[in-house]
Image (cartoon, rainbow, N blue to C red; front, side, top):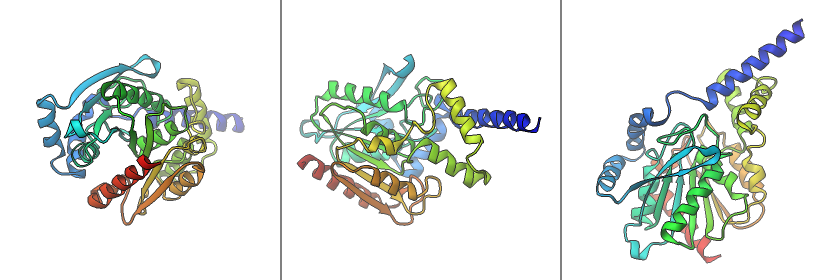
Length: 309
């Protein structure tokens, strides 16, 4: 009876963890106002910059049908000097965020580096539909669709995918797929090694709990309910298949995605060019806010290198 009770308890706990992690509240369009404030906290003036360009029709809204048949949303804009555009950047946001949060990257790429920009809302985020967070795994397939749309719009031969946090994991997970030639480079900023590793760290940090049996139960529930599991959703496994240039960024004060996961990711990529930049004193997803000029320069120099390969 005790064993049965423990099994039932772990199953219920796993189901609860999966629900809390993959169906957070608030989320989506109802959470836009909070994220507008977050965008300005990361880079003051970002929202006013975006609003003015959106009102002028420079930033435009678009949609596509994503994985599972959900209607997904994005915004896109041409480079500041479109006649001399350096390429296209697809910018991927993090967990419970949306296209507005990382406007600093859109502004960096568009205004400073002169790239066209495509900025999607992932499944279950922003103005996109969806029944749960996909933690980057199935999101990677949607980002590949957004990249294809961006290529149809601008027909660029050089495209970079740049993600932060869960968006960085999405970027790394995407990098191991068979991809079109125009997808030339990737930038990941503080992404996790796998969903399993991240939730394992969260259980330890927040609840002082080992992964067994709750995480096993949650992963099994996710497989049954959403069609994927936590170990399958692995940046490390996908990076092992990536041979295109990648820049890895992480703050050494990140206590959400532990710094050790940066090394796991970096070591997993054994083919093709790679760089690493550790931002001293930066907490999670804070490297740009702490070092905007250095961040921009690292990205600029990496992209120049990637173009020369």
